[in-house]
Image (tube, rainbow, N blue to C red):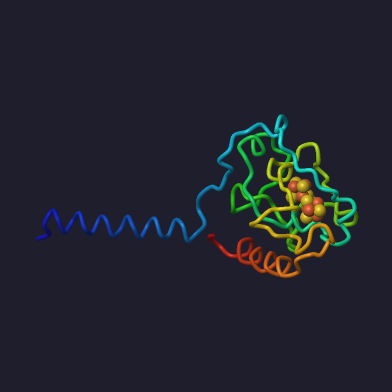
Length: 158
Ligand code: SF4
Ligand code: SF4
């Protein structure tokens, strides 16, 4: 005979196991919290990318981020199959929409909001430059980004 309390405890354990499995298998959705319209976004970053691309090699197009509902419904920006709705990357770590020769965005008019707002001049989380004015790149971030992308994009579950 099993008491009601024991039954409850077992149900709780099973439910915790299921949640863990759910998270580990990567089932679930990632999406931007903000529902701001990217086409009327007022805070586009002002960075002289053209003068910096040979040094930064568009490292910001290697950063992982989730698409918004607007991006997904629009159906232009590709997301990672099996990991909805993380922006799709190729094996070289770059976003699938980056032109590899010119390092330019092939979906510029429709690019997601994080691409519009990212400012590498003073971003604390993604510290692209050791010295922005002197264009001294942070090589450590380059290496870290490749390593973390390898984990995020190649392993099941985040
Ligand atoms: S890292 Fe900075 S300079 Fe380089 S492409 Fe991105 S925003 Fe432009
Ligand atoms: S959508 Fe364009 S700007 Fe955004 S990460 Fe991809 S290539 Fe870069």
